[in-house]
Image (cartoon, rainbow, N blue to C red):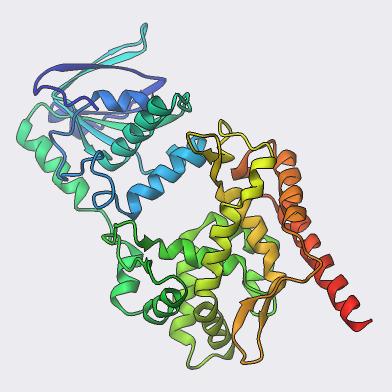
Length: 393
């Protein structure tokens, strides 16, 4: 990332640009543009005017859940980056637009909002360079705030950054929503902890929102509330972490007065450790190495030796949803996963690979494909039915 010398001009190549300056801005000698750039262009701009001290090279403690979510979008859904990301605010004292060369030249340029995303883009580019991987070409959206007065640029940066909302996970964590869930999780995974705030950033922390997405995906149909019994609702577990957190909080609040909420809350507590174990198992299953998954299509991440370290969540979530057929209560009434004897992992892996092919090889589309969820669900339904028939005979 270029930490541009104060006052130095920075030239950026753009894909699209529009002047959206208001009359009031014109009266103040200011202007605003909205531009679309190739992602790599943002690395040419420094962060002198930014209010945060985020340094992307400081991995681990400096990279919180927000950073990791941005990184996941870059790796798995780069073509959706501009839709899933709030964009960048670039402050500058002046601008020169060259429509013929499709470039803009900015003076005193600084990324005033979006430095975290900038850092994750840099980290991604660096990792690609180190591994010899060709970076995916994706676009970013930027607001260019042109203000000649330095003190006014600072005021704009302050105002735009203090508008950031408090993360819902911090609110839920502070109010005790995760106490029992965390205690149950740690029984199965004593070296890990559930994150209760966006500041829980060390490697030992597991994203609580992701765990809730997994738990909703694996929930048996008879437990699910009416609005979650459709295949579309199951797919939303993959698509919308905020939706899963909100529904969990509602069940937590109503568990003492509503029988359905109480049953679901008991399921969450019982299954916390088991669900995470299943997620990790299928995400890193050794037999994926035989399924010709392609790293360039973001289907898998490989080690330096070419061995698959993990596969995309877009492939995993339809599998987890299908496993909801195997979620059972044991003799003590506690929920767990019980695999029928006739079920073989490789059958699921082969079926999942076929569904990925039907989705053009793109995991994001598979994670949003009702047909993929239905096909894998049929596999587990058949295994369950055949097992029951064999037992009865």
